[in-house]
Image (cartoon, rainbow, N blue to C red):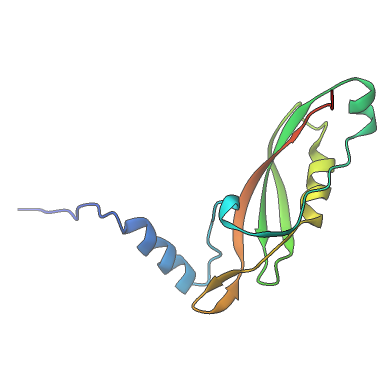
Length: 119
């Protein structure tokens, strides 16, 4: 008779803990982090002239010091129009470091930045 392990509601928590013990950087929701500096967007001049709106999905790491590193464009619309402006804005963000066992740790997160014309 063969058996399998059933799923447990704590499986994700256990997997995250194992990853952290192995030194991996955990993935967290951006909403669970505390910003200490707000997003300041520089709307691309060409997009302003052409009345283009769009968005950019970014993935990045928040270091144990609260700085943003390893910024990567995951998706965007229209492609390439707002990528640089969004990446630059994210790089200037700062966060309170995520804490684990009383120590600051790095964390990976994602964020969508929307570019809308003011009306």
